[in-house]
Amino acid sequence: MMTRSVRGKISVVTPVLNEEGNVEVLYNEVKKSCGSAGVDLEMIFVDDGSTDRSLEIIKRLRSDDPGVQFISLSRNFGHQNAFFAGLTRATGDAVITMDADLQHPPYLIPKMVDMWRSGAEVVYTTKSDANIDQVKSVIVRFAYWFISRVSGLKLGFGQSDYRLIDRKVLKVILDMPEYHKFLRGQISWIGFRQEGVSYNVEKRHSGVPKYSYKSLYSLALDGIFSFGRYPLHLVMVFSVIVLGFSSLYIFAILSIWLLKISGIVHIPMPPGWTTLSMGMFFLGSIQLIAIGILSEYVGRVFDQAKGRPVFIVRESSEE
Ligand code: UDP
Ligand code: MG
Image (spheres, rainbow, N blue to C red):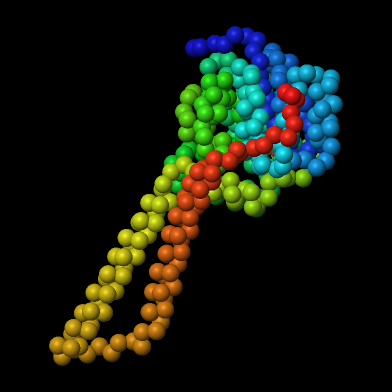
């Protein structure tokens, strides 16, 4: 079994959107956990367009500890892009990504570091859903199942963005040019030696969740459409099935008509309106689904083709 040098440096990357009640507590706990894990800490806060005192508090932490770094983005770029922004600055031997609200418990760090030292290149975490809001839990469970099915990735329920990645995995992630970042999917896709550890998710330490249903939805779409062409394949399957049924229907109608004109037997035709309109709506909706799926892909090609940066820095501790 491969073992790494005993003392190493860990970069902890944390996106922050209005977390003034959390950053300092998080910093203290992470510092403590890194101490007991026997690693040096580089703490990188990414301020993702906060409008509260988060950045001010982070700057104060930095004035006491130069191991604290920050990047402040020019506006809100979203959780995934904020993580990515932080990753571009990480210089540690391994990087831990974690949320700022203490729902990702810092006490797991020593365990994650141990697993990394004994050879894991990715240590991912899964949460048990004890403390998650019921409705959200059902929706999220379904989304995980569906995304895994459709994208061909193996995403277990409750895989979060709390994970440790080795420096060489970091390099691969930074080299992936995709515009729509979906770290969970990217990490699952790239391979390497991955090991999991599970934890009980806590309630937020302070403040309110920043992930609206809308942003969960867009994250799910990224998971579905950025990893494969299975949805396009589904359209094809739908079309073939519809074509099959339509052909049967046409064959039946034709037979009745032929029987009638050849004078063998006369089966009165229904007035036809119901079937016609049903057919129209059915085919219409299949076509709309197909267009919708195609436009998801075209939209992604468009975003990628523009080649815009996935985050813009206003100020950072490096300057
Ligand atoms: N966050 C962010 N930008 C966003 C949304 C969230 O940087 O646009 C941060 C937020 O401050 C927190 C983490 O991402 O540190 C996770 O957000 P939240 O706790 O709201 O997500 P949930 O736990 O509900 O999935
Ligand atoms: Mg949270």
